[in-house]
Length: 165
Image 1 (cartoon, rainbow, N blue to C red):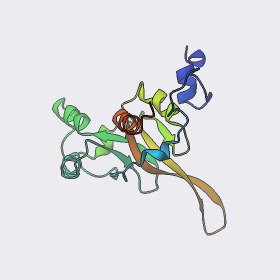
Image 2: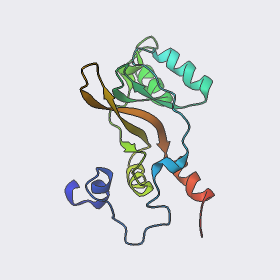
Image 3: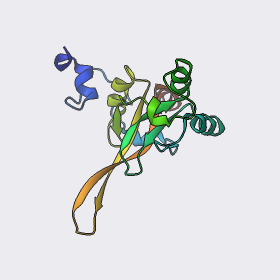
């Protein structure tokens, strides 16, 4: 079951170290990946417009974030096309209809080891940065900002460029 699976425990923040012989990059922070700023779509963008934007900008996926800052999920070109071809969505429908709402988040201060555990099961992780915000009454709340999207290729590129062996 999940609660005794070390990789699940690391992915969900319950355990820090799972490997006895960790690679040199294991404890390096996610922020060292130098990710590019993400392309973010609002939930009302149509599937057709999302395809055009993603293709024009050279992306195959993008986070969908409400104006409030709430991360709703990820949209991918393949998921849009699969949904439309299966008749589950129209090109005119908003992307929120075809998003993946099951996704993993990772912080800038988390380790590449934790990221590696996430990427064993997921194609990507959304990199978030928590920001403290205050309203007019002085009340504070924490808001998660999307900092980037990271894939196994990003991790592999970092490791191969910086390999210390």
